[in-house]
Length: 72
Image (tube, rainbow, N blue to C red):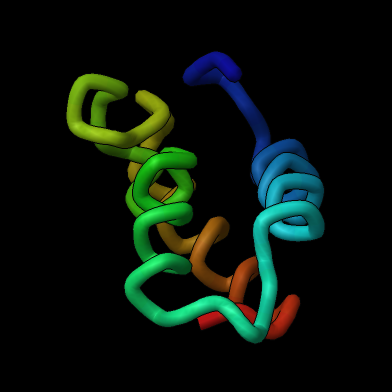
């Protein structure tokens, strides 16, 4: 994904990732590890800090997409 990505593209990427990553029976620690390793916990951070080098607005979009899908 490039920095000129749109909110709709971020939403679609997060939804796709979430479908395969989310398991309500997984411990909170394991879930948070998956989330951080995916880069979707704070996608505006650089990849060297477990982000995706996206604009700051992507943090809000990723978080709201995960919550709307039933994640924590």
